[in-house]
Length: 212
Length: 212
Image (tube, rainbow over all chains, first blue to last red; front, side, top):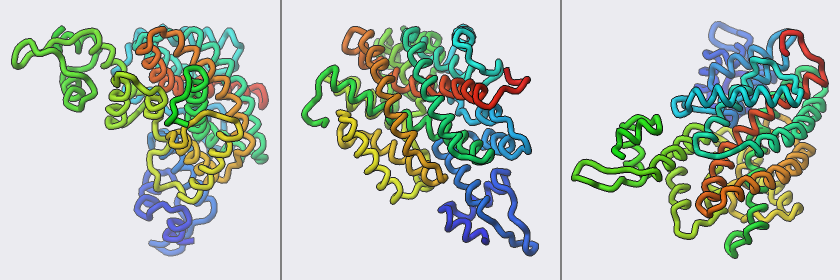
């Protein structure tokens, strides 16, 4: 298909598609003349993935480029791929005390070791978790109990996530599912969690007539 | 304390504090002369909360203003407060098919009803969840099984979250904990979940020597 059709198919405007091509987020089409290229279904898939990573994952362009490069390797490393698929926890690190982050990083490393989690020492998620714990500390919240409870909860969730990945069948499909499931899963969990919190709060503290 | 001291205490630059004052994210200090004001501990707390909502929650300024106004009401409505404390799932709605969102919204409404969740019909989280499900649909992922599993998981997490809120003691402390716990909790869960996924994947698909 031509670029105009690719645009109609995905709802992504042509100038945006050209931008993604320049930024290396979308592989070039097959040239059919010096200024026309042909695109196929893989471009449609890739374009939809890029939009999800941008619009829901809010990953920076450079991170998406690395992630797609890792996905396209002949023998992709699933841990590397998943590592790139984690949005940075903190948009602006200035507001977080680096000493607190170092302290909390140690707490996370201990948690990983105690639970026997097979997680690389350089996994970006370790640092992301430490940054969030430092932010909790900064607003005066004690999360010691919550941290263990959340760790229990994510152990269960990760089993579901890997089942979701496994259902994809092919190796490429599984890798795609891992990326999509990680990024979209964060947002789905956040929205469902907010509803469950509202429910739990309504049960515990009573409901107002205008709420339900 | 003077504004310079407030800045030193929180690490937030003076021009940024002035910007927050103009935007109504921080209440004015007590005027001690026509161009000097005095700030106290409540300003320190509020400033730290604003930074968390901005830098980790990535909430837009207008949303934070509404959230803080809801927090400051004499008889704050916890559901309204929690509703504002949900970052929009989708940064750019253009990339999501509105028909798919309507379809998925129905699925979410059915899930809420089936589970007997006490969630207001206008809760922003219903729409956020529908948008994420539409995005899953758009990348060709079938989440029917995952949705139920996630709903189970968040029911447990919400119990932990309300325990966390309850430990704050005072009504204001509890509301503060609900906001902080919701926003920071999303990021903490995401980071821990990524580690648990890496662990689960290492168990299931074997570990590479250089990863652990």
